[in-house]
Amino acid sequence: MKALLIGGTGTISTAISKKLIEDGHELWLINRGSRNDVLPPGAHYLQADIQDEAHIGELLKGQHFDAVADFIAFVPQQLMRDYRLFRGKTEQFIFISSASAYQKPLSDYRITESTPLYNPYWEYSRNKIACEEYLYKLYREEGFPITIVRPSHTYCERSVPLGVHGDKGSFQVLKRMLEGKPVLIHGDGTSLWTLTHNRDFAKAFVGLMGNLHAIGEAVQITGDESLTWNQIYQATARALGVTLKPYYVSSAFLAAAGPGGFGDGLLGDKTHTVVFCNDKLKRLVPGFTATVRFDQGVREAVSYVFSHPECQVEDPEFDAWCDRVIQVQEDALQKMRQARLM
Image 1 (cartoon, one colour):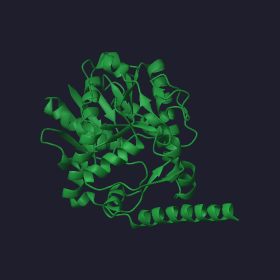
Image 2 (cartoon, rainbow, N blue to C red; image 1 turned 90 degrees about the horizontal axis):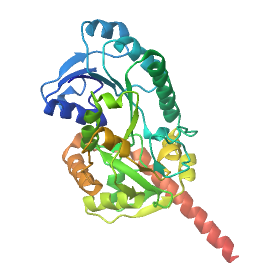
Image 3 (cartoon, helix red, strand yellow; image 1 turned 90 degrees about the vertical axis):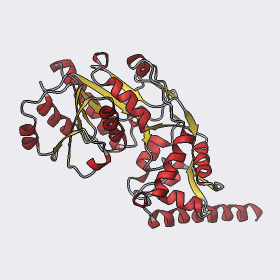
Image 4 (tube, rainbow, N blue to C red; image 1 turned 120 degrees about the vertical axis):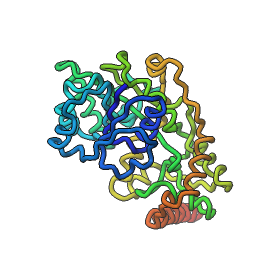
């Protein structure tokens, strides 16, 4: 199979790139080349900015691909560009959407591909919905061979996936755990969440590439393991060898108290219990099973992060914000206790 990835070196796409090369496929990448060193030898690189449509068009002259996947399209205008570039040049165009596009709040915690798409909280998700609608229109009216993939929370060894962290990633939360500080957990930590390791994601994704049964379909790719946020944080603390000190704050309060945009992904995604039904994926990719349990994956991630200084990005502003949130809630509780005694 001759495959082209737009991007190819992100959390999800790096594992897919590696899997394609390992399986002997012909891999082409369009990106700026800043992280191509994370991939094994064997890929063909078109080092360019995908936004430079004229230049990309020249680079693609005479090329035809079995599958093209865009990992960095977020709004319909970017897919309009992709359609102009790849119409007639691929047997399958794969768009990476998001499971956060599913209806919030959910009417049924069990999510399938037929769950309605509606997210009033998060613009990112609404843009993904608009992208899907545009592609389905192309499929119905032009026969453009689309496949839509909806990931949920996919992680890799470079970062520990947690619910409440700052813009610089989750390392500061790990640091708070190691220092014995309380760690913010949204709600009471009992809602269910699904985490998928990128190696598992890659197995499923490559199984959809070049798959004629996937044309015109939307497919979610997640693992089958559902964990509470308490379990996620506890497993992380065990991987660090420390005792977790959870501090629970309502999602609504965290969203209101956080910086601009902080609450969008919380209220529009992580606050809600999500359990995915992957029957459709397993019909399309027979034999697929996610094999990396979170307790295993988080140990691997913790080991990697603490052996790679570039992954240890501190975030003192987020750290101070956590302390302020805790202090404000403790002060409010103290005042309520005093009022009750009066």
